[in-house]
Image (tube, rainbow, N blue to C red; front, side, top):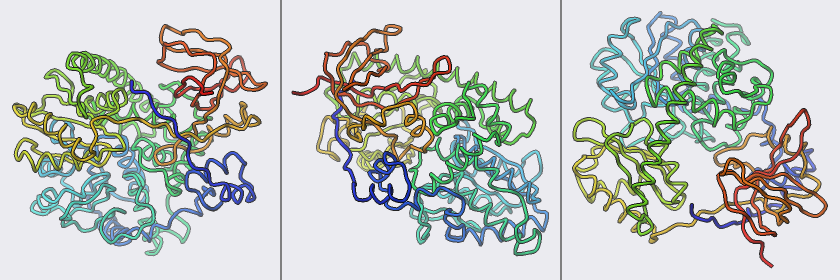
Length: 570
């Protein structure tokens, strides 16, 4: 593990004072100001503050197309994606459209057979869907790059409405409507909507259109806010930037969960994950519920995850959630084996001399390579690609990167420098996927490493933990820990990490791999734990930590979760 550098996030004291004077807790005011919140209205995470659907380009046009289809009794088929964002987006679409009178079903591409998105192969499957040939295909969380797929649908007499949030290519598909905040010319203020957020917005626009047509009374139609739990889950699981609009959506979903008002599938997932919905937070969504839904798409077929989110039958939801939980345990086992094999092979090849990490094993599972890449990236702190065998002669790879290296741009350079060895690729700065000629793997690994060095001018990289500075001693308690837990933190709005100097009063190893400590600062003493760290600390330490709340025998106390600790200076 590469030792990180600690840096302090710049404070914004004037903004913090303004937020505090608007009634926001002083610590939250300081933390939010440092994360770019400039006015109290951004902290008012109520439905009334939601950016209006009319600002999303083509949402009203797409709503008219769907309203016409519903009134003409046309068949709709949702084309989903095989991750948690795609599954929740599909569930939002199915639930909302059925509540508004649509004839609708779904089809989710299989990662191992057709691959991602609305491809011509998926169109062929759609045409022979068991519920009947659809008139309109509605994509969720995919479609913006499906130029060939939309053409194939048109050739087969099916029209397409696209909802997506991914970045477009040079050519847009010839769809009936494209709803995507990232398409050229769209002035929607939040470019960070997840796929589930985009379809939720379209459903709001559709309800408004049906109200205009007199199908519903001016304030009638289904209560779409009841789908906020699904929107929150997909938004957090897709790790999109949590700007004010996304924080609003996630907050509203968490409020539903804490009040016990959620889909049967989410209630079942909380149960199998042994999490308490009454104290639901973003961490539960990202690390407990999300991975269980994702396990279906990684190991088998995402239909299982979608059916869990679509059913209202509590017993069926629990049965499906248990299957997802078993799959997630399988996934963990596969991932652990693959990671250990990767670490062993890297230990033999001495990765220190390289600016990147590339690993491949012919027996690896292609649904899990992305998770292995993610773990290795954290261990070595350099851009990492992991590959598994796909079709004969082809490797399927998944990559994760670090802030210094834009992964998609590096792959673009390699593909131009070595034409023909990368069969296809896509992604963004921090994550990407690609298909590679198997016989070109060694050449690719060399070319990838050279491209990383060329892009950055570096052969090694230093991780940075950005902290919020010292935690005021009056806030170092269980009540404030609970207050922090109740807020929405995540991508682009990171959970607070504090930094202070402590005296180590006691330390011992738990299960031979976690360091349990008693730390002292001034007149306060804290229990602390450093997970997966087995080396003892010196007496005086500089600690980067998260404030957590530990409940034991009904008593709540503050606990520090250590991110990093080193010898205190001076």
